[in-house]
Amino acid sequence: MSFGHSNQGQEGSEPRSRRAPITSLSSASPRPGLLDLPAMRFPELYVWLLFVSSLDIMLTWVILREGGEEVNPVAKLVIDAWGLNGAILFKFGLILFVIVSCEVVSRVRPRVAYILIWFGVLVSSFPPVWSVTLLLMHADELR
Image (tube, rainbow, N blue to C red; front, side, top):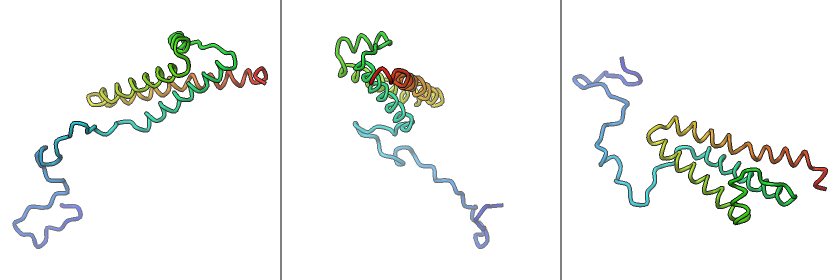
């Protein structure tokens, strides 16, 4: 029994298949160029990581400007040594490391990479949430 195809009038011929013909790898796609990159695996999650990390930098700077302190010792060292520009470079360097790591891991273990990027987004979302909480708790002192 075939789905959607009738074998009437095709005596002696085999039924049609819906599958694409098997071709060699070299004829199916050209060899990638030197600067060609494969498609990213989790672009939407990378945008979320970038978003919550950017919020973290902005809210941290607001809190520092209002007299608060950085509680992350590594970030405190970076901010003390290089200021806002150093904090931005440090944060985006970490984001780049996470994204590249997820892309590399996803080529071999896609499920592990998916869990890793979700974990990264989740962990990166805590500082902005805590910063907003602190700003709301101390809103009357900031006026």
